[in-house]
Length: 91
Image (cartoon, rainbow, N blue to C red; front, side, top):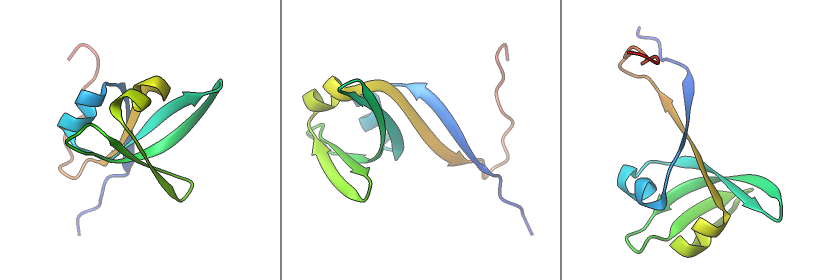
């Protein structure tokens, strides 16, 4: 029996274009009225609208609205199914 690696978090910065190109679910950091909130990116459509989930609700933001509230930080959750070695700085 093969064991599954634990769920890992990759924190990075990005752009709406990057979100569309990668086409992966992610957690986005939003900031409104001085408060940070985290939402699930469900998907990006061809028009650049972000489909988000937060506290059981779904909302849609166009690219301009997203850029006003998104800090650029995002988090991808993944499992290393192939047991690939991790890259370390300097490799």
